[in-house]
Structures are given as structure tokens and as C-alpha cells.
Length: 47
Image 1 (cartoon, helix red, strand yellow):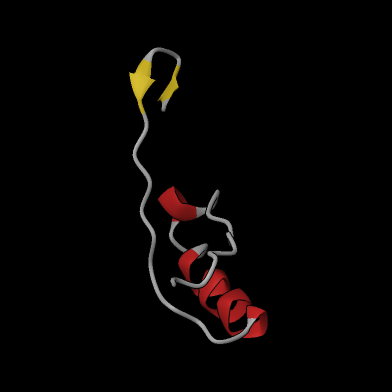
Image 2 (cartoon, helix red, strand yellow; image 1 turned 60 degrees about the horizontal axis):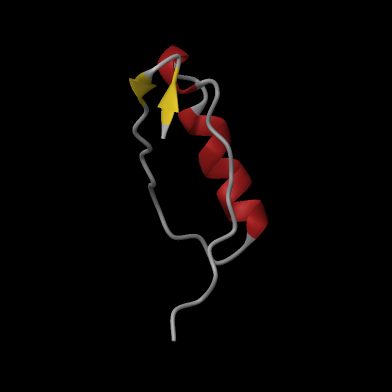
């Protein structure tokens, strides 16, 4: 993936059993200025 011709990298962090747990974790992550654009993505179960 590229933005303005430059490569973009993604960081995935954590495994949460519920969306509420993911929301709480996201709120903590977004306190860090570089991570303010973080979001939650649903990942399908493996297998």
C-alpha cells in the first residue's frame, strides 16, 4: 500500500474477546499522538 507515493506500514496489536475490550484498548492506544488515527478491524477466525 502507498500514500502519496510512499509505502505505508500497519501495526496490528492485541487479541480481544469482545468489541468492548477492543474499544477499551483502542482508547489507551489513541492517547499517544502518533496513534490517534488507530482503528478497530474485525479479523475472521482462523480455520
